Length: 438
Image 1: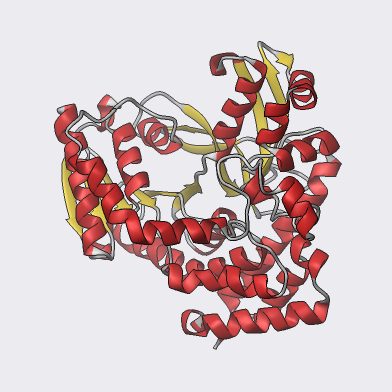
Image 2 (image 1 turned 135 degrees about the vertical axis):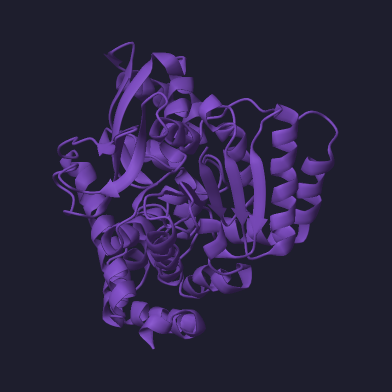
């Protein structure tokens, strides 16, 4: 049976959800589940949660824990990565320094100055994991859930030989939302979605084989509750004619239109942003809350005597592992190198496209070109990500400035001189964590 290793297993929500889904497949119910984290307390909580799932489900899976990454990776068949490089007291400055300059960040984990500096800190750690895999489990598959997704996957795919892809909730989550708006059961919906992580576009969205975009447009224009649920993304759809993945809170940061003035933030980014409130520094406030309450929240789940819901969810990872083990082939949107998949995005950049997976491995789909109005913004973000990855790997500090000069939100708010000063401040704050730029 496969050995499935979790690096960053202290990510309690991710670990318990992924394990729950994995064990619902008969091919996987005897797996060895190896949990690894650098925090002993978090690791023990995750062990207790996973063992509870195993016991309640009557599975024959074996649960192991370790604080040693190499031990966890040795002879692994699958490696799930859910790490966070640096605690809140490290990455809070990714949000607070831009805020001092007037760049209002909501989440800050994917792109923009905050996402770029998170990538610069995280890429070296991810490459260490991947290089350990090359030595200890060279035939294993990495499934990455850590952000910033596209930049981390690009670095690994460029610099190492391991089979890997990055997984995100946004494609299937948005598809379910859109289906709900038009009253369609998900099993009657089909779609093609492509672009880059958090900025992929539904090139088509069909209900029973018929174009459903007119129904989506009608719902946005005529139903206030729909219009207000995703104000940023709905405004983008009305302008671009294609719906974009990931919530309004995220997407409000990825362009120049919604967060450059307080009145626009109030209009678009405060009341209708999908799964997370759009106010300034949402993610920082949420993690600060978790820092205070996480032990209580986790104990409440573990100690609740009521049976846990062990029904299979919609995370891609379990379906992918089952397919690679010889179970039913599966299609998902994954983060892969652009080998002709999207013809008007940079070659080899990390793109998010439909991927078929089976015992043969991953087979990305060539979808052709994005609509030109969508390709402009997506291309800019992809080029910025390419510069950031190159900067991290080569230690070329100038590329970091060039990347942030071109960030749409930053450029909408600041002059070039102001951007230079802001980036200087971010480098100074992050100096202990960025030895590649010393």
